[in-house]
Length: 338
Image (cartoon, rainbow, N blue to C red):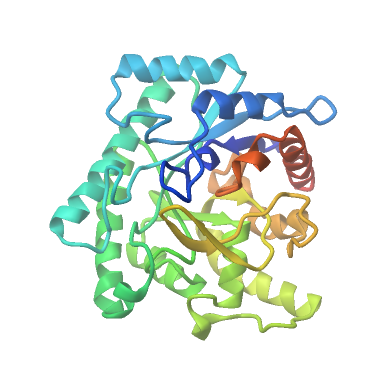
């Protein structure tokens, strides 16, 4: 079996950053590429990057010529491009997938933009695998709860249209399960959406270790909690297997991450599963063992790479070389355990 490629995400330089009074400034694409390229563990380096398609890293309306320049820049570091993040949220290109027709049209336009950029990168040759990541773009779940049946139905309808767009462009979408996204905030609600769309060839699931750990605890959906506080290791892995058995068949993209059982938000980003450094002493997850549940039979689902997600790390943490070396080390161990 071909070994999984190891990717670093570029969006930790953007998500939760900004120019507000309580925000840290974004880290440029050039600097994120430099930090990623500098990581080295016994001669092993990152193979590529996953990439957020919005300012200040990218103009989603950039010309093909400008996109090809970006592709050249990424390739100059020896990197491939894997999965892309469509700018589906309000304030970027898109808007809520469960919103009115105008909002849903914005959401779909963001998917079209992402598919266009994906095709340009493929034409260049820098991209040969990966998906396009989406979510419901509806922060928080209170509005969803007001009419959860019809709101889930609208998310499903929007995702179906998005999946058709992606399929026509030769792409696949992956919906990232995360407790902050309405209709995707629990393992059960996420499964309802995936099954409602029912297009596994065009829309699957993106599993993130930090976020799906909060699924177990039922943080925003206590009725679907699979664990109680004070759980034993035996109880944890029984619950973990139950969750992954449900979602793994849909999983087409995977984020290696660590979580300390807390939620965290930064800037405009609502509280979600807290990403921690790979070697955080408070980390709750055996990263290698937990990854194995998601990556079983990964090749059969088209997974060719794994990506680290350190979303909302402080800039000081991102600037430390040891941060990236510890991340790369655990990703090597995840890859080699498969």
